[in-house]
Image 1 (cartoon, rainbow, N blue to C red):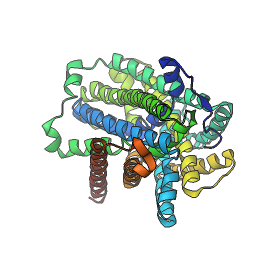
Image 2 (cartoon, rainbow, N blue to C red):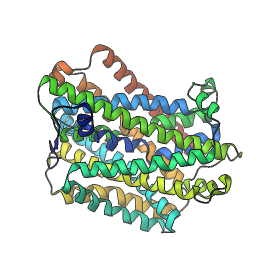
Image 3 (cartoon, one colour):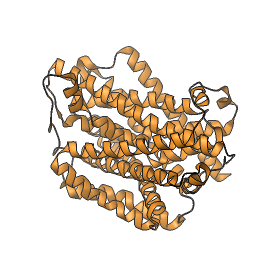
Image 4 (cartoon, rainbow, N blue to C red):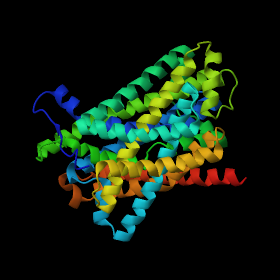
Length: 428
């Protein structure tokens, strides 16, 4: 994004002032870890297996911290985003192939996010789903306006929406009164995961939906909005503060996901409602079960914030991917309108076809499409950050290479298994 490159000033002294200046990119990418697609697996996991899958969310978060840290390091040191690096390193045919896969993944991810926003508008105001989908087109205008005022304004909007989600779910947990002892035991892995096929399937869904491929492209780009010193010490400082930013943001995302699972366990599992799958079902039953009239409204408000946040960052990622892979320069409004339409058109078709039913299936379908593309972003990232020609003295040390390649292979294997199991269930 040339219009935002090195536009955020970094103060020379003061830990807290520097942390404030560097904070933002981590929260932009963190919204992808708490989008409506994650809600489906979290609600299913909590309603069916109570608190026993919290450890899966914890492991997923650790993987996310590692990969997003690598993406930030690469952007800071190489001064390239992941899409630009792929275009420069691979053949044109391979780059075009990777670009098409990434555009499909972004459209699939946005499908979940747009539908999530539309569901929230439907639940709060009775707005038909298809009109709610169309309204998300105005996200483009909000992005243009805020980025025109400065990239920090866009980051501020995202943080406000994340804070609203956190507040809503903190209230939901207090109202639900979960078994905190059982919550603590949920952080310990259970051997049942390997004997209960349904639990394993949901756990793989959680892991498979954790790292969004477009987040790696996004993070490697937005860290370059900071005007850092291009010295050895300046690069080390930028990497250190960006790690803190990512660590805090992704752990907040973990709190949101864990809160959704805990709410589902304390409300639905406790009442024997283990078949809750649709977000609409969760909304309609939440207030009656808790005995609090506004509980459902808090749930819908958090869902709306989740969908809006994710569509904003998805649109930014679409711009970065298109510019990086194709090396084209279009007017900002045209770039964002193209990436927005790539998401809205499939969403309109899907909503028109499925209507108000089957939205959970659409959300799961979007995660399956993401699983197809994920490794095509993770493997180049690990490869580039392990290349001394690109990273110089900041190349991944041996222990980090082993850890990164292990995580990449695990994610690829779990996503492949999720894909096979999902198609097998559809065929069956």
